[in-house]
Image (cartoon, rainbow, N blue to C red; front, side):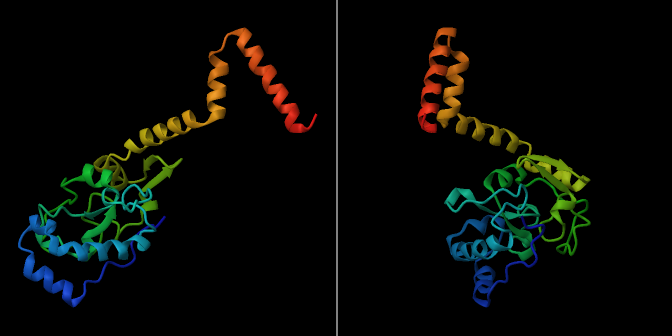
Length: 209
């Protein structure tokens, strides 16, 4: 898990020209002329983020709806930072949707921050994630600071505990051993004796007796 992104994406001269010529306001982000730039951004940031979401640190997918380019400071509020390299990180759609365009700054800004002091959440480039959030059992998020707590709140990271529980439930349902245990628990006394006897027979066969 990457604690922070060490270096941002570096736009080429050609990419800078496309942005200058085609970007007028934040709604232009969805223009098709920026598709190649977005693809290059994702390719560059995946290894820098160890292919994990900048907020929940879960693995990012490779399908269309499995990874988003996140604007840390909302582009709807600060559209001039829409293509600022340190305002761009990769997130899972769940975190991006929940965070949305909620405010993440203590004070209004005119130039992009050079540190995380003015940010209310963990900034992927300025803050060490492990100093603000600790993850237990892959899905339980503990805030270690006010930034960590605010990140958990805005991105609704508590949702992932339920996701993990549903995955475990689905996996247990598909397991023949889990099914056997369930059948045994719901069986009558006579059926239980039959199951135990059958298990004993197969166990002996496995042992070669």
